Image (cartoon, rainbow, N blue to C red; front, side, top):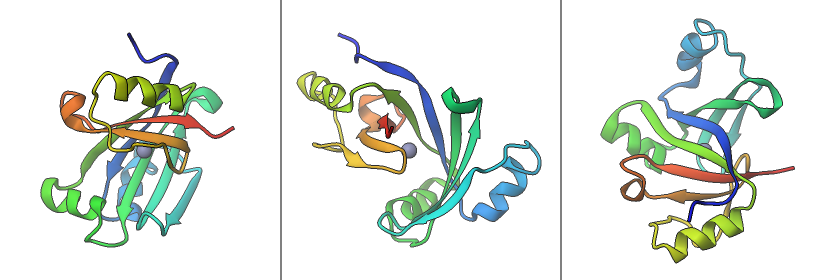
Length: 140
Ligand code: ZN
């Protein structure tokens, strides 16, 4: 059975070494104005949100590691800068997680985590044909 309530792409996350350097392309060349740039100390990252398409649109998130030893830092060490994950918005994250677990999909969270956008669950790339997938129930 399909996951009930997948609505749209919420964001595409790109791991970068330096957000200011990345904004020279995404903001200045492509013209996507960041709505917010903030440090998330609990995750050891700095995030720039670049929304497009209005309230029902999607966004690019640039993620810069503040600690080279965390997961984003290690990702860049191993792969270089680049796409880190895609995120799909769902209506009900608890129902989606229960369904994933029932179907044996390799999830990285056994309960939804509190992410920048709402409550979220990550699916291992081996369960999603090579892409790290995040499902999020956006905060109201
Ligand atoms: Zn994300």
